[in-house]
Length: 489
Ligand code: NDP
Image (cartoon, protein in one colour):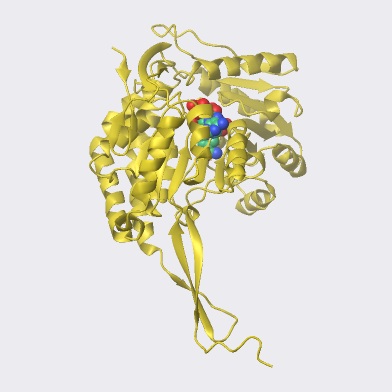
């Protein structure tokens, strides 16, 4: 039976005012499993009005103790109910259960972190270089925040925005990807008795209908966006028109640089996890292997041997190593990029095709793929695939490795593999990326900022300033001396 989900606005599940629905396809089967409302501007206006009203409640805006308790309440409810979210998210985006279960079990941790962090926000007395005055800095919430998320990890991406935005005293409207909205809707519904009405709203639908209407709404004062470079630049343009800030977490073409002295077992596992663990559908996917020529052949052979042992199957099964690509559009995009890569001279040395998985004939499966003989000027080396495709290029010295790594429009993440710690840090200092990992890959923590440079976006999520990023600074001056007549002669 096809399940229906609804918008969640002002504490209620509501259909779209248009009455229209969007089919949600299970990528493991290619079949419709659910429907979500096709929202429009009228639904967004309704959510914005509710969010604005809720954001102005003094018991929310000015009461950090209450906010902290509510965030702890969210964490507790997630701990109690998170099992319900797992299968729904997998039905939508086809990610393997081992990965989704870990992400969803970890959700409460993000909310708890910010529940605690918000209790440490203080009015700051400023050290002035002036006499006769004092000043202090207050932090005030924006009011309503628009949170636009991608389909690869909907609830984790939402947590990175929602938890600090609520901690800061805002109300939030989330627009999940229309490819994977169900878990975000259920998440909000599960919190109906925990979060006061209007503070957490979800409006589903298309980016250029619902997403753009959220960014365009006057009462939405800041937008936090995770998605593609194309979507991000549209969001930033609309936000700029209204002189409102946006944070953009966009794509990447992250290098994994392996030096000849690397611990090869560790490096092979790190490179595999960087690109193949989530089928390459991770913003930090380590999609370019830049490896010392001396170890390249052996490294690639061992990688191929490990990949040949992976088994394809249902993402809901614990022992599946490779699930489907998240949606049909992405599946076709990856296959057509592989076709063009071959035409540009790349040689497929592992995988390279779609995969027929018995029992899942309608599913969007693609083999983990290794490409060699890849030109650094080719599309496959330069553009994000967001799929299980690793391009390999060798280097002879560190300068060449650094140049290859930095010769990209993106700058989200990079990996460095060497047993020489000082050398690893020296290379890290020369890599243009928001995050550099040495001898491991893909860690995230609420304490470490995430974000990109160059076309990977701007602004940061998480880290020590995460809550402040959803607040504005206000300086309050206090005169201590009588004010003299400014025109006294
Ligand atoms: P998209 O840019 O296509 O979509 C992202 C979100 O933006 C979706 O909810 C989408 O809605 C919405 N959207 C699209 N156009 C607009 C618009 N004009 N105005 C407002 N909202 C809009 O990205 P994908 O969903 O395809 O996600 C994959 C991309 O996300 C990859 O590039 C990946 O690297 C990046 N990403 C970055 C991360 C990071 O932290 N840096 C983390 C995860 C992913 P709809 O889908 O309904 O059209």
